[in-house]
Image 1 (tube, rainbow, N blue to C red):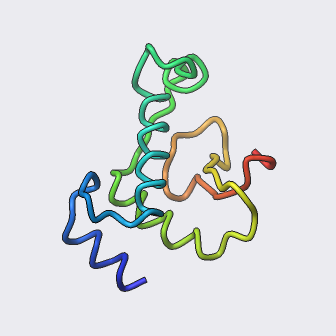
Image 2: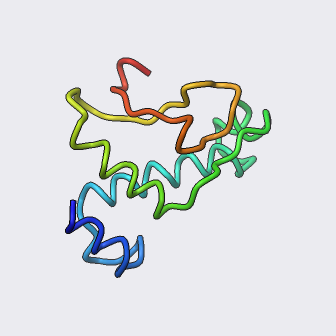
Length: 101
C-alpha cells in the first residue's frame, strides 16, 4: 500500500506512471461523475436528474479503491451505493461484483 500512497501524493491522476489499478479507479470515478453531472450521459436520468452527486475527489476515490481492491474476492469489481437515494460519498459506497450490482 505504501507504493500507492506515494503515487497519490506525487503524480497526477492522468500521469503515465499511474498503476493499472489506479487507472481503473480513475475511469470508474469519471463514469460516476459523468452519470451525475452530464445531461448527455445516457444514465444521467437515473443519477444527476434525481439530484445524485459525487461528493469526493478522484484522488480520494482512487485511495479508497486501492484500499478495497485487495480485499475484493470476486471478479469484475464495480462500485455501488449502499443507499440508492443518497449521493456517492465514501461512507455510502461499496465494492461488489457486476453480477451483484
